[in-house]
Image (tube, rainbow, N blue to C red; front, side):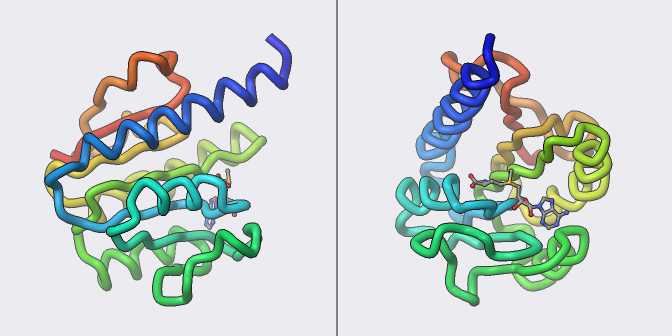
Length: 163
Ligand SMILES: C[S@@+](CC[C@H](N)C(=O)[O-])C[C@H]1O[C@@H](n2cnc3c(N)ncnc32)[C@H](O)[C@@H]1O
């Protein structure tokens, strides 16, 4: 498989998982959290999928396409190990869905990032809410692994439900 194939598969899996969340959270009140704005691709997709929900976005900086920028009331800017704590104080455990796209090219840096941020995520999610992540959060307490959509290879993306 070429690097191009890998990127295409990863993005198709990401889109498929995001699309599947529409049905998953139906009837579940709560906002959506986007951890990792990046260039705004998945934020743009989420706001199309969830036009009636508040979407709060986290990143250390805004570097997204100008068309894909949340307003300041929906933006938590800065290191997420700090802003996730601020958000849990402000928003409480009310997210119906968290999408966390927090990996880097560097595997060791990604592991450190996930170890730091992962345990802060459940405090932001309502009971029965979903956490979708590009990284495994299997070691995070209070998150139970859920099956992925049938067209997504196991391990390519990770889905959990808050107990
Ligand atoms: C893979 S990119 C997100 C891509 C985005 N979801 C998209 O589709 O365009 C990851 C983003 O998360 C941010 N990020 C990762 N770890 C972070 C941390 N600990 N604090 C703040 N921002 C972080 C990075 O700055 C980067 O913009």
